[in-house]
Structures are given as C-alpha cells and as structure tokens.
Image 1: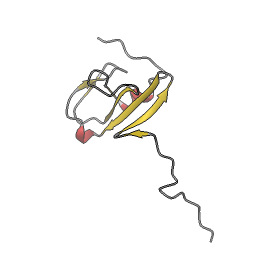
Image 2 (image 1 turned 45 degrees about the horizontal axis):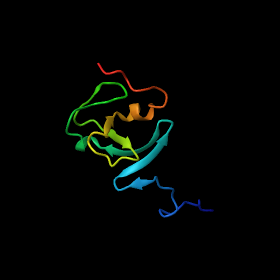
Image 3 (image 1 turned 120 degrees about the vertical axis):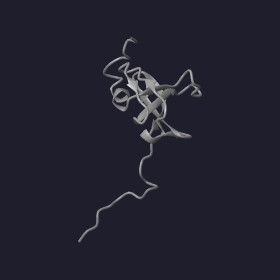
Image 4 (image 1 turned 180 degrees about the horizontal axis):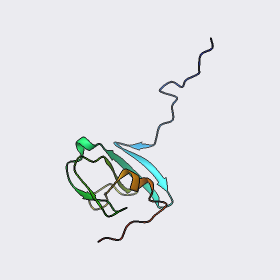
Length: 95
C-alpha cells in the first residue's frame, strides 16, 4: 500500500514571528499579533472592533503596528472574530 507524503516539521510553512508575536499584513497595514489564551487573560479590556468588553478568561489577540515596539499605548486587545473581520468593517465608534 502506498504511503502518503507528509511534510516533515522542518518543511512546513511557518508564520513570520518576532519573538512571541506573529506578523500579519492586511489592507490596514502590517501588524504584530499575539494570541492570549483564556487562562492568561486576567484583566478586562474593550475591543476596538465591537466596543464590547473582553472579560477575564476570554481568549483574544493583542495587536500593534509592526513598525512600533509594542508599547502599552500602541497595543489593542481584540476579540478573535473582530480581529479577523476588521477588513470587512471598521472599528466601532466608542460609546
């Protein structure tokens, strides 16, 4: 029986990573993005995509412009779905 050809771990494409963040490009520019698992989400944030709260324990992403160092003023916490949909809809108006 023939075997399937599977890529070894070294041959698999990897996302561009800078330290602990991956690089993403979109219509809105280049971003560095870090995934925050629910177990590490300990504070409440407001998502710029929907203007709703991201409660502690909810997995989400942190994104900042790729040309920045990721200082606190540049980082934004987004719901995963809001981050993926940011190209189809703009940021929500703050309440």
